[in-house]
Length: 90
Image 1 (cartoon, rainbow, N blue to C red):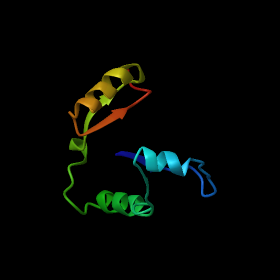
Image 2 (cartoon, rainbow, N blue to C red; image 1 turned 90 degrees about the horizontal axis):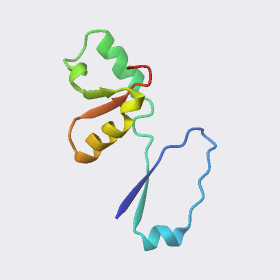
Image 3 (cartoon, one colour; image 1 turned 45 degrees about the vertical axis):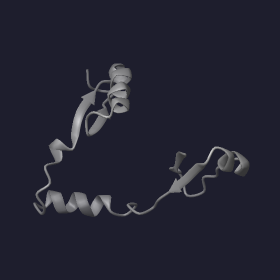
């Protein structure tokens, strides 16, 4: 089974795909708006001192753009928590 996340970049975005291909390859098409409005309230709460989240520990690795291959290898190996590509770093 394969999963295909749908992350539209605009409200009127459109996607085209073959229903047979989805059936034949057992592709799950997943979309979610569950967190659409939750980021800013969470940021506001943390900025106001509520919560005890150790935000620095969420990102385990930061790579410069030229470290992209290494970052992908680490991700595929299943190591690290959040791996961030920072084009300006380096």
